[in-house]
Image (cartoon, rainbow, N blue to C red; front, side, top):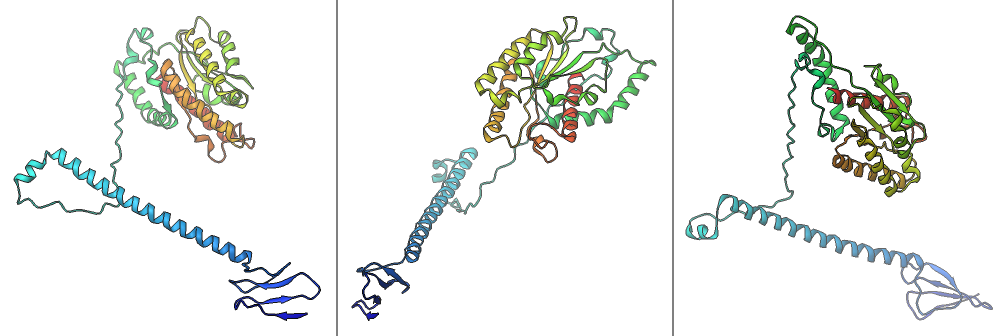
Length: 357
């Protein structure tokens, strides 16, 4: 082997006799590499990658600097807008400012964060006559309007349950002592809960307060169209303004398109209006590990269902994302555990109590 030094001061080349290869040193890190022939200049892959990363870092620093300048301009515009709006509210004008030269100029302040006051939601106070049950014409009372249940959340249902439990005994005592006798109770309204297999095991909780007038109709594997076909045989013509709670739609999201689901709900709504009943539709419960397509479809169905129920004057029970908590959904991500089934049944039972009261 014969050693040969090239004229380039930063590169050393070791030529191999009888072979067409040479060991060439990198211009940046001076590390050797075996090349088929001597090139004019050589940079190893590691040095090239470092140079590329340095360029990327420089570009990112320029972008960060640009974003900082933009943020400073936004803060300046917000401060200017706030100053102008304050002057308009107080009635200040350029003429007034010119007429008062002794007025001190406004002091510029560096606004770092825009403060927003939280919106205060004013809850409506509902007033009920606790002695209404003493009226002799109780059976001829007006029907409860659908707007009262246009949108009911789980939190509202549980608040009503706590209020009814705390004031129920006191109210019963006042009613009994009002005229020295026990008041006559109104005629019981029939309550029917119909839906798919998620209703299995909820009968004890839902029907417990009144087993004579409440019933749960569970249709395993049922879709919206199946519930529509079964309604005629469940609701009797002799029922006077019954309460009907429908929970269905989970099985439809597995195979049907969003447009098909909407058409089936609309057909169900036309059938429900023929029954002369108080209607409440329950939202579709969320699922897990069933693919993002089905989970997104359930969200779209519930959003559309909320608007559609308000348009059709149906009640709507929104479960929200309550059942995504640990321990409520079974291992298949579709059905409910024993704890989840109990929570679901209590949601429906509390809604029924709210509607009947």
